[in-house]
Image 1 (tube, rainbow, N blue to C red):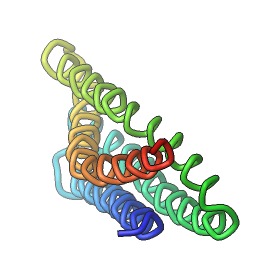
Image 2: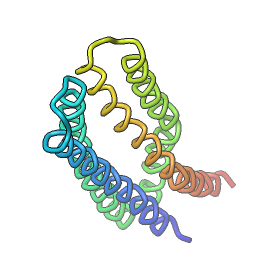
Image 3: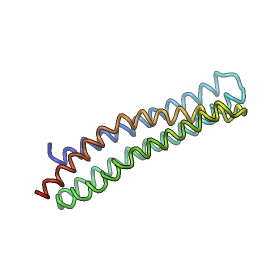
Length: 170
């Protein structure tokens, strides 16, 4: 597989992440609707409704933005490749090394939000905050799962770039 095909495969996988974020956001927005129209009005339900609404809007916008960002990466990468293959490989290599190294950090941040939400759910007496914490937990557990499935595409593309860079040293 040539490196331009690898870029396309990688960006396609990352666009799929954006689509899954939009799906997650839609689920949260539907959940907010359910809590608005079909669940008894309690402080816990109110917290869940507002938490799911805010989280749903944010992750939906984030998913759209992430999809567009990956389209831009692909477009810019193809243009740079046509201009100068060596510069493209060097640029992508440096960018993907940062992405690969930062992946665990992002996952740990998501875990921290889930743990914080669980602490609120278990130890805070305010039902509204518990409802918001449930929505936050759903959001970040969803992100952990989605990002976890995207990691192989990051690793594969990064390894292919490493192999290209290694060829220069030979």
